[in-house]
Amino acid sequence: MTPLFVSASVAFSPDGLILASGLSETIRLWDVTGVNSLGEIKGLTEFAQSVTFSSNGELLAAGIGDRINIWPIDTNTSSPRILAFSVDAGQKAAEGTYLLSWQTANAIGASLDGNPVDPTGTLKVSPTETTTYELVAEGLGGQEVRRSVAVEVEFGSSEPVAEVPDVVGLDLNSAIKEIKLSQYAYKIKEIKTDKAKPGTVLEQSPAPGETRKFGTTIQLVVEAELTIRLPDFQGRNIAEAMSQLEGLGLRAEVDEVQAKAQTSRPITTGIVLSQEPRAGAAVKPGSTIRLVVQAGAESSSRIVLPDFIGRNINDARLELTKLGLRIEIREDAETKAQPGTVLDQKPASGTAVKGGSTVVLVVAEQIQQLQNLRAPTGSKIKK
Image 1 (cartoon, rainbow, N blue to C red):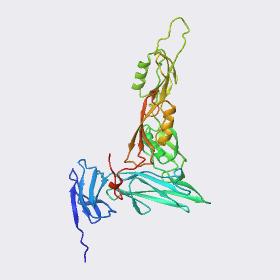
Image 2 (image 1 turned 180 degrees about the vertical axis):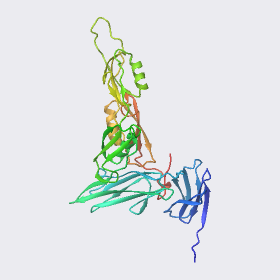
Image 3 (image 1 turned 180 degrees about the horizontal axis):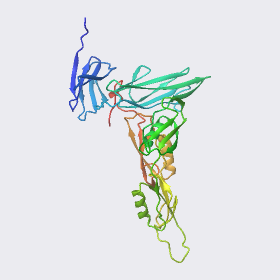
Image 4 (image 1 turned 120 degrees about the vertical axis):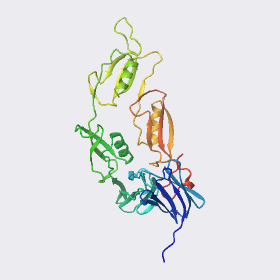
């Protein structure tokens, strides 16, 4: 006898291209134009009593029992990606316990060693022998990507290793961010091929997918950037010099000093006394140029911001306090990268700011909220 399945609810996406249907303990997504299945959201504990899309089509909600579950929906069916999958040996809950953490994009579901998990999340593990964990991210069209991470256990000690992320083809800033999230170091070598946009990663070593210990240096071969010949700023007004630097795509680090005139004529406040690198030097776009200017009575030295992305918020807060800067923290509840990890900063690293300025840090949320609204797989709540 053929089993009987009943759709408790159906809903169209705002653009009318995707149909969602609640089928037993599964929600299925259909491509209306070709009447093809785009994928399934599985692992529901009860029947999906009702389904509906958000007004922009990016979220799908379902009423299941006495709960509301929400999933991100990528209506352009982009391929899923695993942004980071690592073991943090520094987050031991007890001897021999490690924290697995992962982050995906364009995934409607994920599994860890065959067990359903959120597309982005963490899990504590306590291996007694060398163990490899496999993460699988699933996209709407049924596409799957996999990545493995291993904990090597020898003589009662554990040393975590993981697969090297694939950053070939990414711009350098995106590649560095992904490498930091995967807990690796990096070294850059620039070459000129004219085959890719300046700043694009052409090669990497170790190769993507190879297993290495955390902290290993990944060698990046990058298409060389354009260079800029520095003008001579000595004797010019600092505001004029900084305006020209900004127009050239360069940053300014300003040091104000009380210089003594060598003649009876006083030195005008705000005039550039020297620069580094020197005039005529070739620099890359985005480089920081040091300008030394004559200070006024109420002037204060500028501080060049360090790079806090990928660092722990406690370390960043301590360093900013030592630098005499204020801090504003904004938590991101959606990424679920390593809790407390700095994901972004404003102003950017290398920017020269005055003492007492406020630096905004975007941090992975440290205390999860609304857990009763999260689904067992694929759930995502926007604040």
